[in-house]
Length: 139
Length: 487
Image (cartoon, rainbow over all chains, first blue to last red; front, side, top):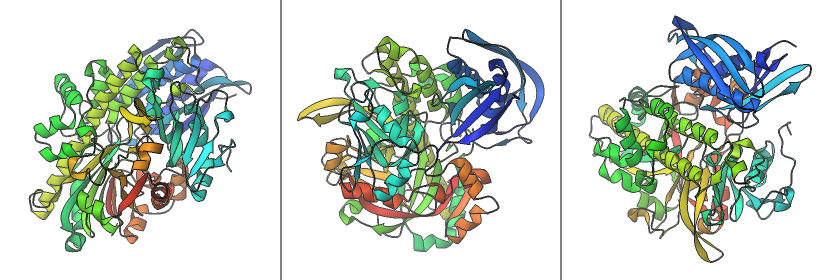
């Protein structure tokens, strides 16, 4: 199974389905899926490290917190993760290291104001010979 | 029927109401009741919103029924268009999912003494001035960046605070639900993240389905109520739809995280994570309520600041002071909120926690919370439709107090997903199509406009017809859009 994501329809919002061979490999395409809901972005300027760490025994909640942190960085700091090194994602916690850069205001296009990553239909689960994650963002 | 269609029970009670019986799910504590006619119910069945009505019926302390207005559509946790009242004295809960991320998203309407016929050729200038004056679009901030202390004061004091700062007229808050300020707001419960998200956004429209619209009153249904509201045929009006911006989104998100393990603590079983809740009287419930009220007050301040900008824009274009243009606020209603309100239940007055998630308060004549000037007719209920057909002013009726916890619909209700709406307009110029229908559209993004196209919404006339027929809130006036700003 390769990694990837697709957006799916939800009446007023947007859903994202992510797939990967292992849970830890879901993290990068999940971030890409989140960004795809918000718009198309190009990065510029210096790199800033961002440590992402969450403890807990529910992978769905961990995914939610990971994506929410990335959303915060996007809407508040106007930065996107240009690389993500996923270190751990299991039923004890999530650890990842990201390198972020500013969004280029001229080369980027915001499409939606993503209010939040919701808990509705939120899931991380085995699928086929790999894993999938589902999340819906509120627009 | 698509793969998301609802296949559970829906029993027709009368021409306007459908029941999901309590027997549908063992955890349901009350029935679900959906207001709809035959046409609308077919649309409603096409997604999982009735399932969400049933899920809400499982909340502890829910009273009467889990309700849904005719503009119901699939949300998260609660359906959009959902109403639920819980009794705190009976262990009733408060659920952030019953309010939504955009806390106190709402609508206000400004009337004018301008006759459409007199400015027919100047609508383009007016909408361009609004587009220039009122900040809009994804993440676009307002005119001022507030320091933490200023923001905390604004969250405590709401719209009256920004009126004191010069953003409005003193009469404005008299015709704002709750006078534009909920008591019991606790800015100290609002996180740093939320403060940061809200610091520069007060006085900005946002994006998505938020809008500014110049409208003309094209039909009067109830002359007495229209006269009371200062609404007359041919008159120009402006409608504003926005909420608590990033601050409110963050308050909701923080609360959902805080409440994650709370249902387990209180032995509450839930069918959907998004319905997390806490007893109203618990520490967690009070914490959410304090933060939610702070965000609600921010939203009222936000719409108040935009009202000021709208007046300035009109005054500039027409070279006449806004006072001379008669730009009085008709009313401001919240449609994403939870409030403690008193209703008769089984003949006894009970203070209930009423969640309105995409639903509008609709109090009848005589209610003490209806502004004095309107008390003989009832509270205005503002129902925006899509950007090509119509919007409505309704008035609350006694039946609302008996059947819907004083609630009515909040809009047309979405019927098409954003993706489908975008696909449907591929290769088309929606702004030109709207212009051919007599509506000038200004938007930050063409895709954003396409997602909000008229066909993405139900016909608002059908939605209000249901509540009119049910006697919940009755038609006062219909307004036709002339020009719209989308974020």
